[in-house]
Image 1 (cartoon, helix red, strand yellow):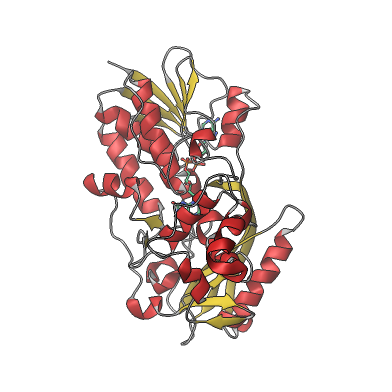
Image 2 (image 1 turned 135 degrees about the vertical axis):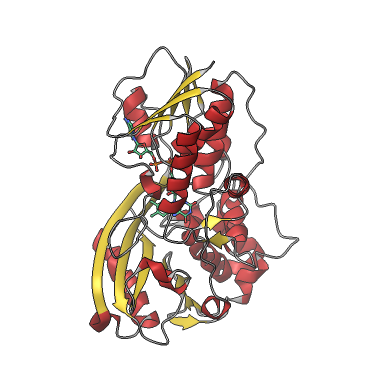
Length: 386
Ligand SMILES: Cc1cc2nc3c(=O)[nH]c(=O)nc-3n(C[C@H](O)[C@H](O)[C@H](O)COP(=O)(O)OP(=O)(O)OC[C@H]3O[C@@H](n4cnc5c(N)ncnc54)[C@H](O)[C@@H]3O)c2cc1C
């Protein structure tokens, strides 16, 4: 029987553990924190926030895998009336419809966008500079990057298509992502996976193959390998609760600069106490900008979309997510150029900044499957290109 050690009990680690156990391996998971879930944990208490705004995209490979195993659980769909309350901040005002130039980039015949050119240059050629900038900023919802136009056109265009798809790909596990994590943990448990929490690994075991399913920063420290780096986003996270009021928008997407604010109780009333609304936003910030700069831009969007929010405020918190929102690919690179899953000597990486395709957590999922396949001595999976 194969034995496998998994370091990290987040979405990647649990995916790896379940996959390996389903294949008959004897699996041990070590998680440093006292609970499982990593960045997919939902806060306890009256305001059920994830670390930032989180959506599960139903076009991803994880969706079918979770569904097949009954791990998706109840979902909170966006009511159509609420979806109609999405607003776009463009030329200084809130609008209901996107600029026509942006829509040009979504036409069926447009693309594939080149890998070697930055998105702004390529998209300007298709839709003009204003449309290209608006499209780049719209992608902030899935990129968390302060300058999406500077990234590879192929990378950004794929995300633009997915983020703008109708009906929307974004789905919300009711009660937050922790529900999915709890079901994954229960499945792993039933398959006989040994899960040790408050169990930080400082030295890799030499007697079993190891899947290192931590953030890339933590993997770099653990493996002592300075080459384990890849660009990611840096974004101010603003979470707040306000007393309910008719007329609040569902979400504001900033097309004048990258940023997204969403009222999560529009789709899931369980996330805040009765009579209150939970709003989560993320405003990507440049290296020279501070958390306060992001918060100020968030407040401007709140002023426009949630009149009187300051007087209605019941709870608020802010933080910065730095390098925690997955990989972004600069021009001339694709996911294949990121740190490889196979590190040699029976060590395999899984996570959202390694060489696997997909959007955000889908990279964690895909790399976990590849890591386990290699650890079990099977050939690398033929994953769909992204
Ligand atoms: C603000 C924000 C918004 C996001 N929005 C979305 C979204 O809408 N949709 C989406 O799909 N994804 C989203 N993501 C990304 C998603 O959260 C991550 O891709 C995913 O949760 C990463 O899972 P992971 O298991 O790879 O890493 P992590 O969740 O970071 O898990 C790694 C685990 O390893 C543990 N660990 C680290 N070092 C050690 C050690 N030495 N020993 C033992 N354990 C260790 C950590 O405690 C952690 O639990 C978002 C992320 C952020 C920050």
